[in-house]
Length: 140
Image (cartoon, rainbow, N blue to C red):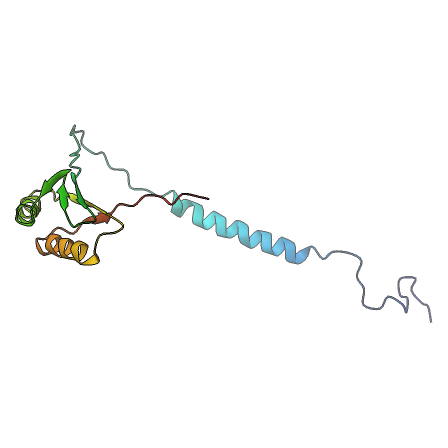
């Protein structure tokens, strides 16, 4: 029997060549996928739209600074107010269109009850945009 020079007992299952067929198959599948999807992505309906000039309405809501000091004194836009004046100012602000944003500055030592009552009054009148203003912590 003739023995082939390519068959050795020590390298029975080893292939030293890369099989290119699976790589070519994957590349062809990807090519077909891209050829099918590219026309779909570029498809758009051509419409001749009319020309018009208009100014966009820039209705930015105003903001109101409400400060509560440690003793419970309320400042409305840096003006001290009594509780009755605060209620009237909140009702006036709630009737504005668009409704203003409330920026709430509360002292660190103020009682929670004073801030909670003020927020409750603001929300009861329909104002929903309330933001707490804080100072960034200093890095040691």
